[in-house]
Image (cartoon, rainbow, N blue to C red; front, side):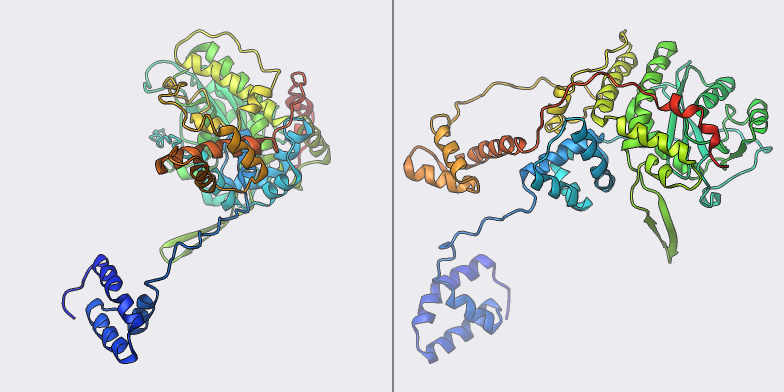
Length: 518
């Protein structure tokens, strides 16, 4: 065969000789088929099927509508829970869902239909990510920060990332996060971050300036807040950590002081990850200066520590093996730091009982509302505006009502939000379905499984010449909005107003922190 012919030419040829082939005699069919195969290049059996199927009406039977296992109610419930968890990934959200749903229902914010609740709790992490994909679309991401440099202090032993060997709770990595904005000159606030290697428990405290004495004061403050004793302190090579004062303090308190290798950020992978996932996620990248900004950060961290350590699951590396040029990693199931502490044999039962009591009293939605209010205060300070200490929200109904649609507005964290453009709240043309919409609603209420295309065909039949084919997409959007409103009625509960909760965790555990097993 010579030059190949196009598919359009093949279709035209099939239509031209199809009738003659089906009506011809055996000898005529053989001759037509031989010539058709030679011209089109089809296999002989395929050519027979093509010629015999030419006259059939392939559109006589409309395709059957796809019945989805997870409907709009499940998707909206997952959006609300994803927002209430501060937008964690699907794998972390999967492990958090039993705790989060139970907590929101216990405090009266959520009341799921039984079938919706079952589907939400049994959905896989991949399904959760797929259902949340429209809500995550268009989210703006930031690039990684440029690593800094530091001096080497030879008197402190080096510990690499591979030398931890599954330590008990109490061995932490520490680092400073600079809130300098785009200019590193001048004086600005820093955050001292501590992350426990065994459990991922994270504590943060603001420092007005980067100074060795303030680092020790911040470390002493965080020691009284952690539910375990501080056994080891691993730092980078900055002069604020590696100095005679810090070495003497660690020796006096029997804390093992180690340092990472210079220019090897992966030696402090645990705390570096929390710098982005906790500090930058909460505070952003704006410049904060002075005592007022440090006090605002302190109030924010006091609330965020409860949300992060009790309601934010994290991954933990289980094994890492090299196969040729590839490194294969496996991880334990995501757990919250609190869950890992409750499962640790190194934590006393007294401390575990205190953790359980605190966990039962915490309302994740209230914590999230307080975090948003305090973030707004920090964002105003970063923009150079004067701001009074915010009043923490007592009515959580507006916050809960906005969870289902918060993704449409993009970034909801005030510390990351860009100046929004004014939204258009007026129509540019008349609604073509305004007169017939009550009729369409009656059809949907009678037969909820009807598709928009079926309803549109029925409209065109009842009102000939009134609607053009190009208006189908408009009706599909209207029907989708109606289904979303109907789905929300299966999810939303009336929140029960409660008073502002106290944060008793640090005070309750302070007297028991020193009783953890070394």
